[in-house]
Amino acid sequence: AQSVTQPDIHITVSEGASLELRCNYSYGATPYLFWYVQSPGQGLQLLLKYFSGDTLVQGIKGFEAEFKRSQSSFNLRKPSVHWSDAAEYFCAVGPRGSNYKLTFGKGTLLTVNP
Amino acid sequence: NAGVTQTPKFQVLKTGQSMTLQCAQDMNHEYMSWYRQDPGMGLRLIHYSVGAGITDQGEVPNGYNVSRSTTEDFPLRLLSAAPSQTSVYFCASSYSVHVGADSGANVLTFGAGSRLTVL
Image 1 (tube, rainbow over the protein chains, first blue to last red):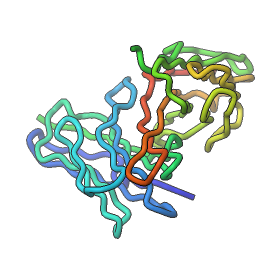
Image 2 (image 1 turned 90 degrees about the horizontal axis):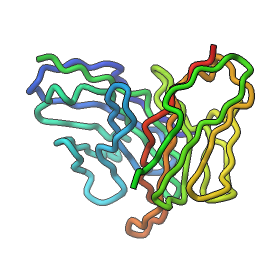
Image 3 (image 1 turned 60 degrees about the horizontal axis):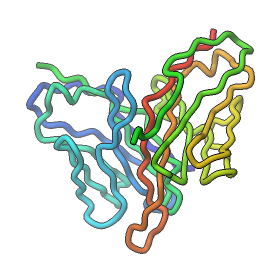
Image 4 (image 1 turned 120 degrees about the vertical axis):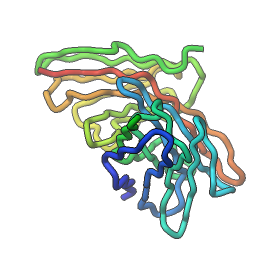
């Protein structure tokens, strides 16, 4: 069965510092990959997605993610974190051809210190 | 264009009561789905639909019922609420696009969520 692992439950960074959130997946074939962000009390907003092609994908709010097939990973990065980035981040995967069904990781809560 | 609209935003039920969470989308999307979010669990798929009249179970379907009589609406029914169904529920819709040789690439649009408490 497919699964998504986000090893870090909670990460704290200082404003202006770089950020990397880890995501590993277990899947029979290369899935479609997504990162979503959820601010407190809000719904989910898509940050970026990987379907095919260039393995480094750019998203909104200055985020990027790199797909590494050999490591089954899709880590999210940002070079300089802003206080407004404090939120919970979810990695999700979906099967090619039917990714209207997503499997989510358990999320990483990001705290940003001033 | 309102996107995905969920009602109600908040609801408190007593054990054994029934209720329906409403979900409507105005984007003419083929696919709709319901997820529940629990602390430390991420989102888990309850039920999904690939078109009007077609529904199927997801990862955690027990205690929930769905139907899809129109493209726009996908209600989630709790027939006899239990405290274990206390959660935040998200509805999502999507449509399929071609990516290279692949078909079926979807980007899900989520509603704002419905917080349900069962006492």
